[in-house]
Image (tube, rainbow, N blue to C red; front, top):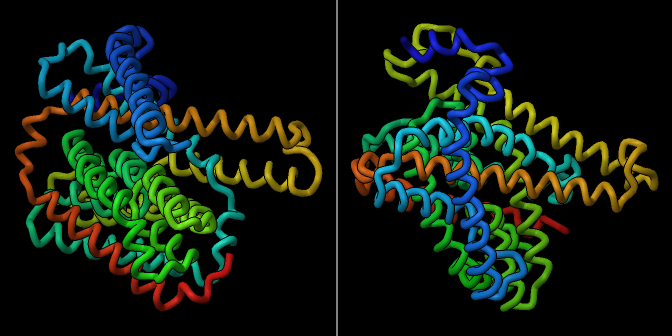
Length: 389
């Protein structure tokens, strides 16, 4: 029986929420327990390394990164029982989508306007440039198109979050997702450590330009904040942290537009055996529903903030303190669910399949990172002086 035939026997609620029938739900429990333990350990290690050992208030070492590395290590060293696989898949496919939806609470439409009419074009130039160059070099190296797409969106938008959000949209294999995450993680960590010094040098201690550079060239949100905090601490420029953070949030907004477009592009370029071939492909058809949920959550945040900023309550129900508490709670659950999903990816990955991809994806990742850094520098040199904050 094919997967498509199996899915037709599930009710819409079963398929969308669990991916299995109600009777089969107990099969999810063993894998989910293992993923939960891995998630807890990853978050603890992130806090311990970044906070206790490195002294940061917010760890620049993403628990998502630790989760994928820890999962890959366990799957490489141990032969995990097949009974865990349903729970792993549930974590990757269902809990991931919920986490992405909740991520929308981090953004408001007002964040975009803080950068002004000159800051947003810088973000767009960096995204488009990274997508075009990464797709080109991936094709030149004759790598799987889905892998190149994942590296491209991870480099251009928001690192691991973009990768895990794009994976279901293009039906990527778990090994491809894991490898893309590994590539983005390696170069993102390098940028976190060295780019603060590079930004100070190339922009001659200009706080806004340095913040724009860190916000557009470093991959992960946690890495951007970490790099900007390093800059702020070393060069006594707290404005750089604010600019970098808002720039990264605006960059994250474009995930809602780029992911459907890349799904559309992949579908149009897909080989004959792919499910989209031979059908009339439209962006609306490929638009993942969880991206709509992501946008809806951002709108929800914007409306609530508007009520508070007008001197009233969010939705005429929550005062400022209660509204902030709700936002913080949703943010926390979103981050936890992303760690859960990546723990599931790592634990469910066949390490031999990842190794079989070879060194070429890292060449793509290196090229992508260098290109987005160069494009960011050129765009900021051209327009950065016009940005006020």
